[in-house]
Length: 189
Image (cartoon, rainbow, N blue to C red; front, top):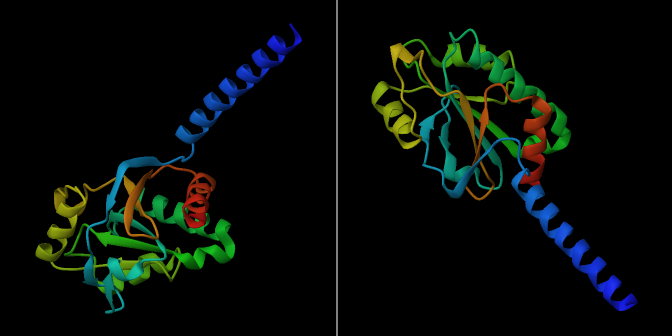
């Protein structure tokens, strides 16, 4: 009888651990997982400083890619502010994260406009200007539909892991602490 009770308890504990581990795995990230993860499309364009940015050369870092524009008055500054705060929460680990703002308004987003805009948040954030043709290819590769002269764009940030794979989409209203939590998990991989 006693052996049967112990066996029942072990079975119950095993079942609970299995259920809890499955639930924890599903709730692992605050952002939306991209499943299956897939290689991020190459970005090979000059940044607002005139330096060539190649996503493939950023392996070993997390790269956060947001598509927006400098004259935006709501989502873009909110997203940049939240990313700024999330990186501050990472402290020294923030050096292993690069933020890219890919312009959706190539007419008005000059290198200087991008530098001025991003400088309000973090001077290490990189703006990607370009011609309509150059940027259209990047937008298309990431499934971004740009309309209304750039004023209709994505409402999320892609997270590319250290291996160059798309792993998460972070909503523009995500809290900085949730973003930081997701980034810590990916940085530990």
